[in-house]
Image 1 (cartoon, helix red, strand yellow):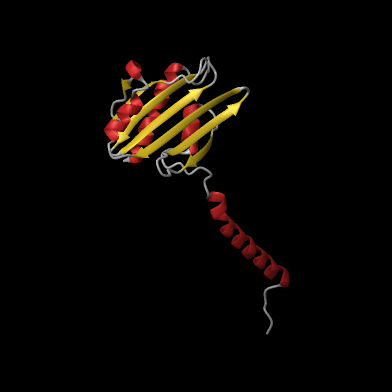
Image 2: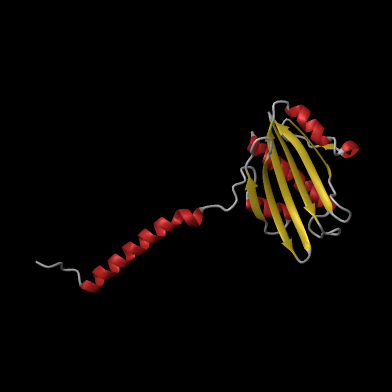
Length: 176
């Protein structure tokens, strides 16, 4: 006795099955994130710098710290958020040496890691920037947020201070 299901119906079932298998096998590739930064997602970084950012991650090697960089470029301007994390034996001493660059401009970031400070980090004349430096146990982190626009409508000096705190909160929380 032959199969009672008509040929077009069997063909349709087979095509649906093949389509399902193709969808399932390509799912891991579609779900793969481009950025592997362990401390901040690309979406969060985009929200912090005020536009869609492209991220990259460089793992620590030897004496070089791990680095996450998020950038948004266009119309003759650039905004960036850079996170460095290093594991050291004397974290408090290392943090203090990095924080010396802030000098008297250093202000405490309360409730961030074991200790943290921030200051302006204008890289070049006409750029706006903020830097956060902190530690969580034996890990020292530095976060730099910059804009090449002197009068950036999104990353104003006050917005940078608020956003650097949020970035430091996220990074320190993920280092615990």
